[in-house]
Length: 448
Image 1 (tube, one colour):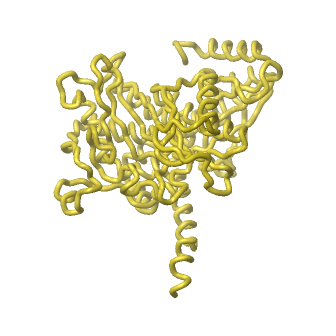
Image 2 (cartoon, rainbow, N blue to C red):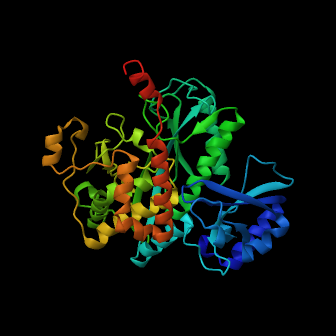
Image 3 (cartoon, rainbow, N blue to C red):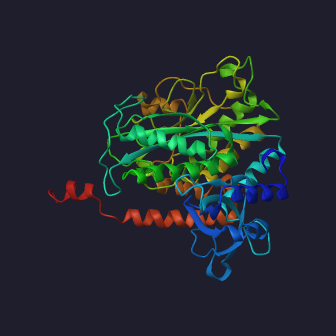
């Protein structure tokens, strides 16, 4: 609970807020295993009972939740996540949202709930004395509609474009996020035309996973309000940069950043270096979670600032892991940046497997290989092999095969989510594999 708030105090806080703002409807939010936001609404008259006992719903049609014969689920609101929805009417019959933990009817936590999966991994970190902090950077595109990829501008990285629709959309998005209690550090134009980024302020991983879900909806909601379409599709346009979700992360012990060490290379402590080693070791097998779509692997190709190789360094943005420059007096900002995830992942599962990989490195005292400051893209294959620089899987099928053998990911997700996720991805790959694409028709029809 926030600031040590008890369950009773949390309930009283929510009921008071709902009354103050004349809230009539409360949307109960949760996600399926793919990270799709799910919601159903209750009226304020049901709120007190919902906070106490949860609200029942049928889980059989939620991806990865339950079979028909065991479909009864309960959504139990987390009072710390109660917020008004700024795009709905305010002052009279307002609408609020609250994230829920999914329970079984008997009151035990449902092991197919992604939020529960992340909580269990955070508990494991807490048992070792650590709090896991993350700061993801989610890139996205604005298009004129969802039927094509007509852009709104021709700007580039950090470009100060003339006041166009994209600039106004970004501004309104930031204001809406802040109104919902989500701190924003930066917002700017990204490398590709009509590509943008808004960076949320670093916080604990559970809060951030909730914030990512809110952020994605806010970006789309604001765009829709202006008659355009926002997408987090990893690679919507061939030949242009895709959209990534670089995740800055660190472990804190008490109020101290466990990743910082004054006199160490890069100012990274032994714990931080072992965390890096764990991520490098397990990077290939967690990729199906951090990059979960067929389209994700159209982004993970050389030449577009997307990481492909299992290397780490301070300056090189081609590496899988980058160490941002240390600023004197900013010890708490010491962190590492994991660059392969994309913004269409399930943030709860993504943060869970990254933490599991890093903690494995810490617990086993793993040592990372030497950092690679040279551009790995420009190395020949022979040199990369000689230096032991491996690669991430190049498509979803390769990623699924690595995932299937991963004891680390199975343990991090639990059997229920692991098996349901595997099944879903096998079906996705099979459907993709048998498609006849526009490329094939253009390439082969005239010559065969």
